[in-house]
Amino acid sequence: MGEQESNNSESGGGGGGVDDMVEAPAKENGCAADPRLQAISDAIRVVPHFPKPGIMFNDITPLLLRPSVFKDAVDMFVERYRGMGIAAVAGIEARGFIFGPAIALAIGAKFIPLRKPKKLPGEVISETYILEYGTDCLEMHVGATEPGERVVVVDDLVATGGTLSAAIKLLGRAGADVVECACLIGLPKYKNFYKLNGIPVYILMESRK
Image 1 (cartoon, rainbow, N blue to C red):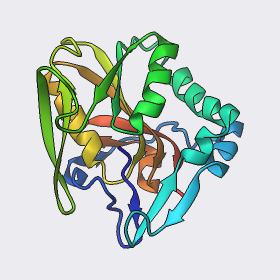
Image 2: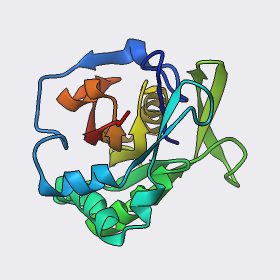
Image 3: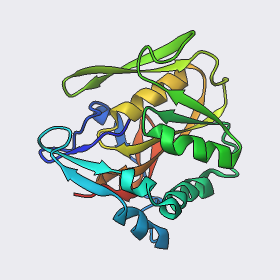
């Protein structure tokens, strides 16, 4: 889904979830030195005042136009989660669908799309969450995950954490064991492994301004 950063606060398009956030002990995150990170950072374009005034939008589309850099970003996630017994990667609509399937295929896991309301046919379960100016909702097919399956949640960017928190709750209600949330970009506070609803958030790089 991709929350974005506001000039006026740490809030972006996602909203909510801040009260559930507790700082975890520092661990090695994607912000640690890796020669691939500079090219990834350089490939992300900052668009001021989009989609509304005050938002500094971190645009990943230039990265997608550079196959080697795109591959490096995916590979860094794959290197982290390979061998961890991950059964499923859950991607948040829409930009979580860009990275999630590639990661899932590489580690031999299934991909679970977490979608906006009325986008999935058949029986679904849903989780509503609070935005800055209203509410939104994520939905998942009933039976997409089995109780006890180890799951990683993927999105492109985390700001307030509201969307990721909703994804964690949704998967938890289905009995999944959410191991971690993984995002390409995060606000600086995430570099030392904050937790959302008790789940660590792993980012490759801090959001650019």
